[in-house]
Image (tube, rainbow, N blue to C red; front, side, top):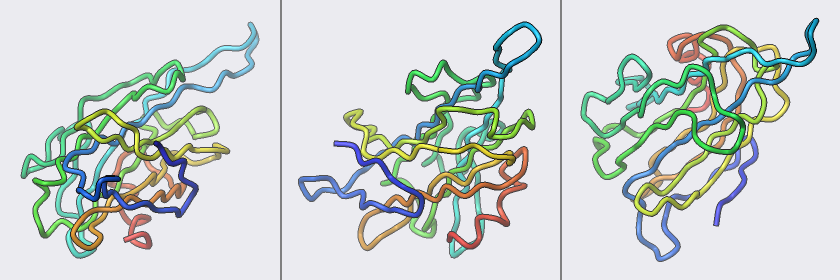
Length: 192
């Protein structure tokens, strides 16, 4: 059963049987919002990019994004760049796979961001979401839907972080500006 998260809400990533999750997929989806033009309504392609920034003691130590698809230790993997988004059918346009069991012990948080590489604001995006899926069985665990797009070009979507002997997910939903994750790292600091 999936949980719909609101901004700032978190969930434990313990399985219902008491076990711990070993592999998750952070899926991101979106579609372009139609705009009224001279010849009717049309959409413009928007290239949103998913990134995962790996932190150790509040310092970024690695990143996975469209130009670096696998973390240095191999525990986090980006499935590839989608430069136009989806049709808004709820499928993942970009995904980042996290093998939680392989994440080195010094990594304590992984923050997921979405950036408009082409520079359009989120006012031009609709049906944007991130979801966490148990990669071992395909079950959606949690979903955070971006609502009310605005005049910003990046979003700090969520993070997974160590909690006791396991992991937890927290929806962040903080707007920011920047075409790549590097532009957004300073805005992540309050959420670490």
